[in-house]
Length: 146
Figure 1 (cartoon, one colour):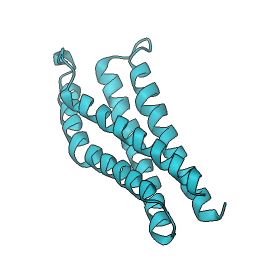
Figure 2: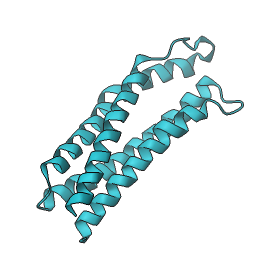
Figure 3: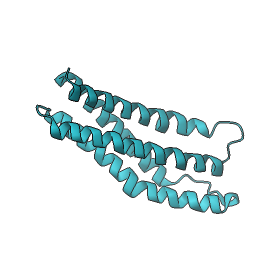
């Protein structure tokens, strides 16, 4: 395996591991820790997801450059990468601002925490599931074509 495919495989699986580790393990478990309140958890989550999304954008850029510069990639590779990047863009540009607004409201008045979860959280998780499926398809395609 040459350097470009190796970088693409590594980048894909690092990105996948970050999403699974933070979105599906850290985020839900955080609220089960002793002493963590909703406002505290939201404040931590805001920092963690801002950092996660920044790192995801770096890996997305690395993968895009690798695919654009390289040749011989399968259509599955290109489509899966496109889906993963599109899901990330929707999360960052459309869903996270809605979540930030809600977090701002909760942090401004912690006694008035809404009983019901925001539907934006469900949309974010839904796009994470799409991203995870796309990254698994991307990684598999990269390995099969390497």
